[in-house]
Length: 103
Image 1 (tube, rainbow, N blue to C red):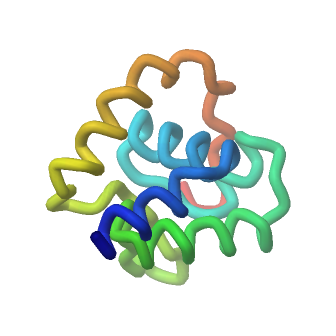
Image 2: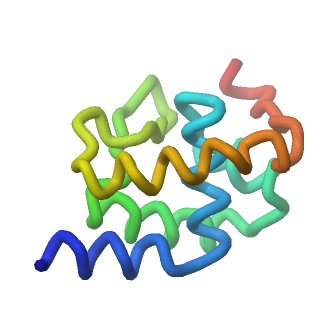
């Protein structure tokens, strides 16, 4: 029941859904790419990513000085259902704004 509650809270915000959809589409992103692509402030994106990470929707790893986010490697069956639904909306997101200093 706890997993359902955490995941439901994490996926109850439109910006978080867009972040998850974007990460799913691009496979791995840094905060600045998410922020620039979706037109959201970096602190707001970081707060959303923290909540998504706590709910085991995304995971992060350090690449040099960058924190890179990806969809959780072993998603629960419930998360997988969410991800399947979000795949239909991937094309509706803006084109990726690549972080020039990271590439």
